[in-house]
Length: 75
Image (cartoon, rainbow, N blue to C red; front, top):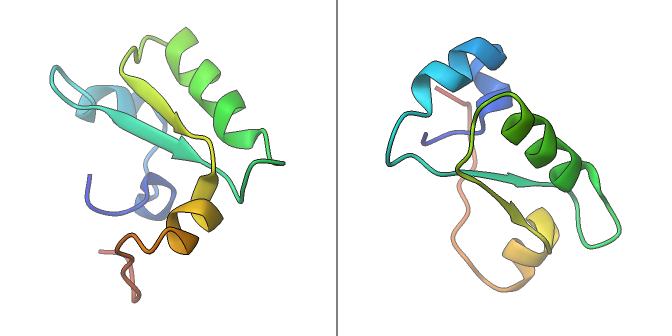
C-alpha cells in the first residue's frame, strides 16, 4: 500500500481484505522507545494477518538512516 493505512480511513476488515497473499505490512512508531508498532503488529497477527513486520527503529530511524520519504496529502 503506497500510503500509511491510517490515512486511508479503512478499518481492520478492509485491511485484512487488502493484505492478501504476497502482501507484507510494516508497522512502526516514533523510535526504539515506542512500543506501539510492536503492539499493533501483535493485534494484526491475532486478527488473521500473518505477514506483519515491525520497523523497530521507527519513523525516526528510517529518516535518520537517509531512506526515502515523501511529503504531501495522502491519496
